[in-house]
Image (cartoon, rainbow, N blue to C red):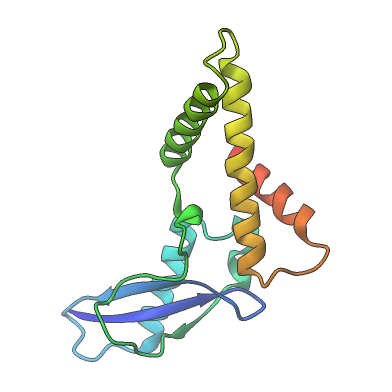
Length: 151
């Protein structure tokens, strides 16, 4: 089985993620296109961008680096969170906020909303950072993040 790293880039040529891609042993010398197609498919599955932006993604074969073939590019893994991951993180953060404020009764919803808002803001900031911190685009990233979480 052949394995290579493939970079997935946004329209600004910024690497969003690098996927380790394997192509079956039935192909002795698979073309780069096979690897790149699988990386684009993985991007859709991983929901790196909203569905309407998938067609704007491009790929390139990753320039080799030493070490094991592993993904990189998202140092906080915040963009790879599943809904279950988000819920767990929000729950833990809400509990921490509640404890820090003396464990008041009857305010669970308030702490959950605050924790959820904080995590979404972290996600929006990370997306903004990955796109090169474009000036005047913070609201677009925030709205995209909120819409993505509601879907």
